[in-house]
Length: 411
Image (cartoon, rainbow, N blue to C red; front, side):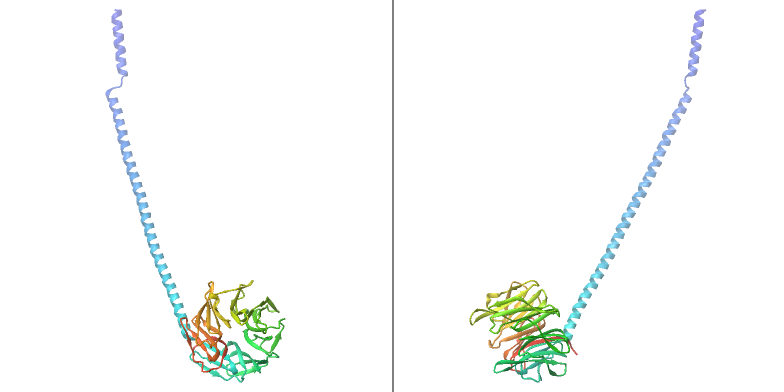
């Protein structure tokens, strides 16, 4: 009985325990849920992937669009810039060409209007095509000419008696005729230069100044003769010369108030002419004695602070009488039968030896490097066109001492 009771109790416990086990349906339901979740996850993943792919595609498209647009824009900009640059370059080239053409027109539309003076009151005029003789009204030796225009020209010289200077002469041309001016008591007048009609300097045994109304003697503090004058302005004027025997040179400067000696009188030197481009670029030419009766040319340069001697190629230059240039690196000097040139380098060189040798050259002036005039004894007039020197027909055999002119428009 007890055994049967135990068996029945165990059976009941087994049944109850069997009722507590999950059935197969519940298990299938769980598996289905898991499958659904996996499907959902896969779908989600696919969707996400698609979204990601779409986003990536959009981003790629945007990037491509940006790249394409930017590149296209850059290309367009570059093309536009290139076109603009080309246009600018073309415009610049056109402007340059126009300027060059204008310069050529200007050159063709201008001519030199030149005056030359000399012995026995000789005054010559060049109108751009030929030289002609002007009536001066004097037989005095004329050695200097300068002006502000073809209708405002001054000429200076000296009257000699028995070989000695007795009176200075100053003439003026108003575009119609030459007339004598009252220059004051000066027995010797050599050269003339100015800044305007009312600011003119004439040098010789004294320095005279013209204010537009009258001439007056300036206090110089020297008894030496002055042979050349030039200035950078009315308050920056240089005068050069020497003593009677030309054995001591002198350099003087005017600052607008007074004249002063710039350099102590230099033994064995004399100076004939001065020219420059500015206060700090001044050339002086003359001669120096090696021994009695034997002399060479000399050139000094002023840099605004001090004077220094310049080197002459082979030192075979004759004494120099005149100097002029178109720039610091294009300076001409003449003396005896030689034309010398400075190109801005170390040496001066002999540019031309003119024959016959007794046609001594006295003065040089020009409008540019390719338009230079030189005058000398026996009516000599030479012209340089930038390539060669050639003689001009002066129409006179009288010696010429100075030349000056202006550039004028053709009528």
